[in-house]
Amino acid sequence: MYSVVVGVGNPLLGDDAVGLEIAKQLDGKINADVKLAIAGGLELAEMIADYELAVIVDAIKNMEGVKEIDVDEYEESVANHDISFPSAYRILSRYIRMPKIRVIGIGIKNLEIKEGLSEEVKKLMPLAIEKIKEILEEENELAVI
Image 1 (cartoon, rainbow, N blue to C red):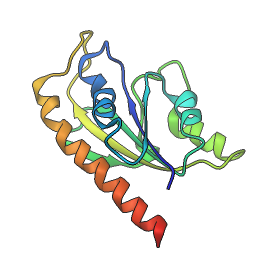
Image 2: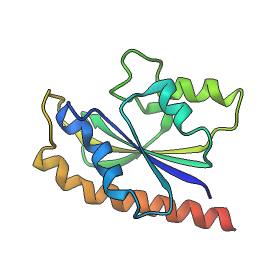
Image 3: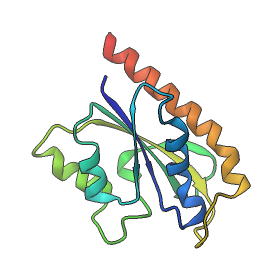
């Protein structure tokens, strides 16, 4: 299965960069392409268009822990000037084959202008990485059957 993991976030908004940091840690260590996205909405949807599976990793405000969330509930924080990712995905799906989407959310409490992650969010990163690896393994097994 041709898969991609996309870390989404803004490196200047503290914990919002957790998706980017997770993607950087996974690059070259998993059987999938890895991309970084500072944009959301349409640009993110276009970025994943050539794949069979896309795992999107992003900070989710006012959520706790690490959870898989439904794509229709996913509201990326960096796309305030753009259409939402779920809307962009549905629009592109009308014209081209889009991948299966799995979204991993990492709970953050607030966004502040600063570089670097809080210790609380850093502790969640191994859980998110393990969840991503489980998803890739599960989806690859399903593709073989």
